[in-house]
Amino acid sequence: MDGSETMDTIRLTAAQAMMRWLSVQMTEEGTRFIEGVWAIFGHGNVAGIGEALHGIGDSLPTWRGQNEQTMAHAAIAYAKTTRRRRAQAVTSSIGPGSLNMVTAAALAHVNRLPVLFLCGDVFANRRPDPVLQQIEDFDDGTVSANDCFKPVVRYFDRITRPEHILTALPRALRTMTDPADCGPVCLAFCQDVQAEACDYPVAFFEPRVWRIRRPEPDPAEVAAVVAAIRAAKAPVIVAGGGVLYAQADDLLADFAARRNIPIVETQAGKGATGFEHPMNFGSPGVTGSACGNAACAAADLVIGIGTRFQDFTTGSWTVFANPDRRLVSINVHGYDALKHGALGVVGDAKVTLGKIDAALGDTRFGAADAKARSDWHATVAKVTAAPARDANKLPSDAQVIGAVQRIATGNTVAMCAAGTMPGALQVLWQAAKGGYHMEYGFSCMGYEVAGAIGIKLADPSKEVICFVGDGSYMMANSELATAVMRRVPFTIVLTDNRGYGCINRLQQACGGAEFNNMYKDSAVAAQPEIDFVAHAASMGAHAEKARDIADLEARIIAARGRDIPSVIVIDTEAVSGTGAGGHWWDVAVPAVGGPERLEKARATYAANSARQRVFN
Image 1: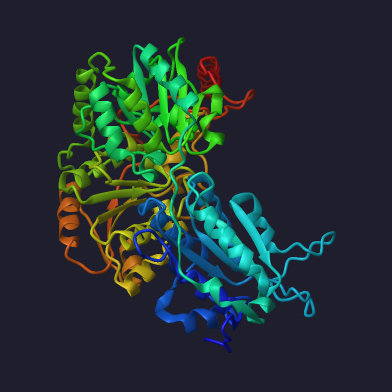
Image 2: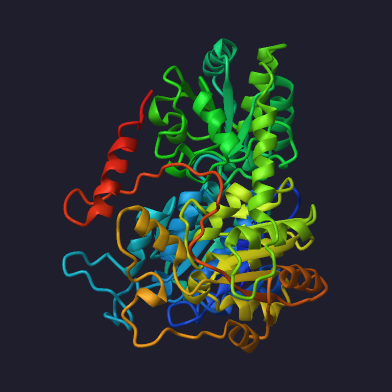
């Protein structure tokens, strides 16, 4: 790959220079920050980027995937599992290849997770315009399909000259390693420029260590929060994903135990403390536990740590019902720290919590409601218990969760993304510390299978259990073949309720009729009879169908010895929800029209809307 070299410069193509530079960007632990590159080649990246990746070999590994979006999902799950300490890149051709990744970019943006998109682009010299798959803007000659990335990445650049990588690459890594700005980056790389040669400074390719900084909070902001905590009578902590990314989970567990402050965990923060921790009161909001929502309703001080306060967390701002409540938000980015009139502290969660802890002295609150917590655990045990064997009755999703829970170990990671299971898992899954991985910032159907690969690649020691419904599996399952090829073992529990059961229930809760969600309610001549076992087996996975809940448990245990993915299909009923917990969620109901059921839904909506409190 090397070109001619002098003492001060080396001649490389722009793509060769990019890959060489990426291969020497290091973490404090001595590993590459960009572990490797997922690639599907086409015109626009095969000749330039493809040749450069082949030339650099194992110094920056290349992995083949099946779909651009799902390759990116795997990369995102990898970054989430490493707590943003390492990342992966994804490259595609121009046009549809690049646009396939826009959804994944949005997912990474919402979740504040780093991934590097290296997108093939049009010719900078414009000689062959319009090229195959080029989007032409009738009013702007600088636009290409890759401009679609601009709203959904944290940094965007178009490489139209080989020298541009000298500034674009450091900016990209600065964004991906900045705890406040962290998120996806898109470098739209013009295909002719990829192949152009340039004399690059040798010094540009010296290894560089990227340190994840820990911003110190402003002392005045810390003092204000300390005063608010001291004045409180019933505080509650809302732990978000920022707790994990700042590696503040151990400190938080100790802080809450010593101060006697209940913790509720968001989807991104779940697993920061193990379920057995005495201050772990489950989850808040729409998919909240009864004891967690009770603690939130009574709280006069809500202390958010590393959370965006998404509407599921807040019950669309009806959960925190105490009229005297105040909102505190500790976040590394001021955008999140100052939401909803919060008393904000901008800083690293671990550093900030440590300073608050030191300033509080011996402040401790009254006993938390241990009975509410034990009652909740009893409720979970009841709804997840194995059902009596009945050939005519299908199990619920809650009972499937119970089956996995009973055979889970402290090494098990439960993961999911969309449908019924995310809400059911947040409410019912009793996670060991670090035993939960949910993509619910964007709730993207199709993340599950690829995400399971990313988790296992990031931490091969974990047993990864991927919960996926038949709807999400149908949307994106092709990376199952990739997992087989690379011998990445994990277990998929595929619940088949013959449609979109989650949205069907929501449709009815909003006063609507069952329509176009379950196959039985769709305009089809015949309901499909999909053989998911045969389908998964055709891609090389070990696939089988569980007869019932007991059989499911046995098959998950048997999967632990395999070196390929295992897919276990089980038929489930679509009517039941979690059977426990929960709260109102603001989903707009039509203001006029409809039968009596819609009128009742409108009345419920109006009553709940009146309870919303969106500003302190």
